[in-house]
Image 1 (cartoon, rainbow, N blue to C red):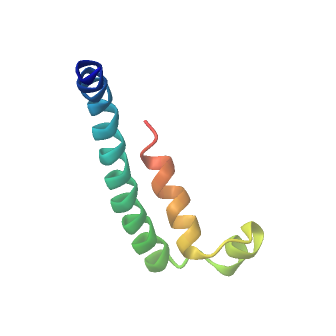
Image 2: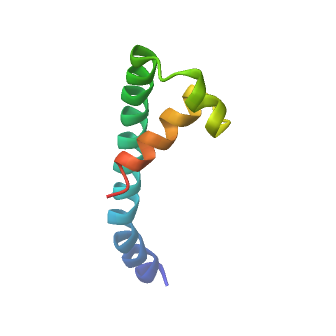
Length: 68
């Protein structure tokens, strides 16, 4: 039984690593998007149109950049 648990752990290892890398990508991409949005002053019209704040828009942009 323990042997199968070890094999299953090796099977999941690449999946866990990929998720960790994707989370880091999203984190850094979100920071970059937030900096860009604040620097470019994305405008109240976009914020009102979407109903989101700048942080939420940056998180969406960060996720979009890292889904590949």
